[in-house]
Amino acid sequence: IAKRRSPKSASCSASKVKRLAGAIVALILVLGVPGAGTRAAESGDAMAALITAAKAEGSVVVDGPPNDAVRVALSEGFQQKYGIPVSYISSGSGPSGARVRAERAAGKYLLDVFVSGSDTPLLTFLPSGWLDRIEPALIAPDVVDPRKWLDGHLWYADDQHTILRVILMRSPELAINTKLVKPSEVSTWQNLLDPKWQGKIIAKDPSIPGAGAVLTVYFYMNFGPDFVRKLYKDQKPLISRDPRQMVQWLAQGTAPILVGPDFVTLASFQKLGYPVTAIFPQGPEMLTGGWGLVSLVNRAPHPNAAKLFVNWLASKAGQDSFANASIEVSLRTDVTYHDIPPYLFPQKNHKYVDLYDAKFVSDRDAALEKARALLDL
Image (cartoon, rainbow, N blue to C red; front, side, top):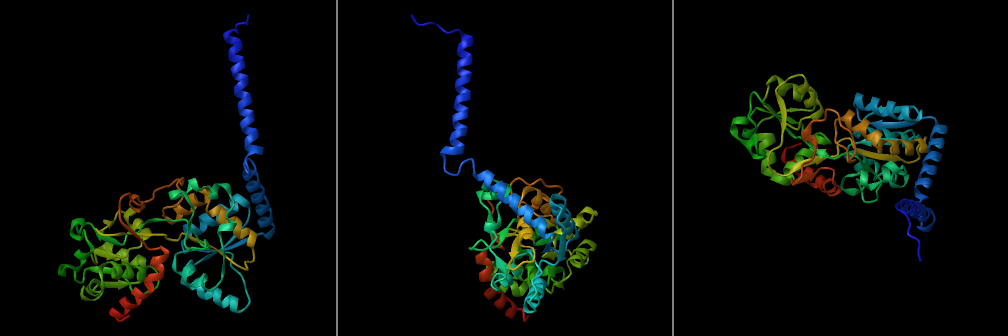
């Protein structure tokens, strides 16, 4: 006759079974599945070796946005984490290309990492052969986990995954003085061509490289040459290359509309209480990568410190620092934001033109040439 087990002994037996099952699962993870249980350890070992090598080099040279808050965030954040000083060059733009070209012609290789907008790395650094692929250098578990990134993957600016992209946000390209203009009066871009706005529009200089040229290309590609000619010539806008001057004119009422505002400057004037705000006219809105392209310069003086820096910058801690300092929206989905304007976050079910898309960048030169000829630039 079989003995009947008591509820207590049955419970103890079930508990033993659960513990045994857990041990078996753990053993399978470590030994039975190819690579399972070792990948994390290998990644940790690789990071430990990289940290040691980076510390031996003693410093890293970073060319980044000409923004004091970003300079402090990147320099102090990285040094606090790893004890490695950052030599920070405030550029992240066109002048960097000319400087690096001159340095290399003289046999000098002084730069490790380039944090920038889209034009210089894609149109100067990359075709000149000055960059190493960044994808193989990304080894931190926090970075290579696709679940941490928008749409479940890391983002790159080129097909070869040479340049990492860490920023994606709405690009506010129209601002108004709310005491002088109602948003409904400029709900479409075509509203700007109304004769009543002649001489009352401030516009970013369409002849300058970078953001001014990109906006002109957007207008040309989406609304045609007639729109570009009427806006920049017939409407007789006040043209400026100075981002602060343009927003100041808007805030003081010199003109009620600003095409191509610098959103960081705009936000600073809003905080001071001026009646200025960004608006988004109907039509395909614009997305930008801001200062969010990260490149590894080849033949770098501190190659290991450079790799460690880009891993830190792409981590949650690095993106927390960078996104908040630059007032931009990270492609990481776990960033903690502080006082970022809500309108910068992309909205679902909206049609967008990504100004950092590789095809847009490659196609825009032809459109820009036509637009400049149209405007006699």
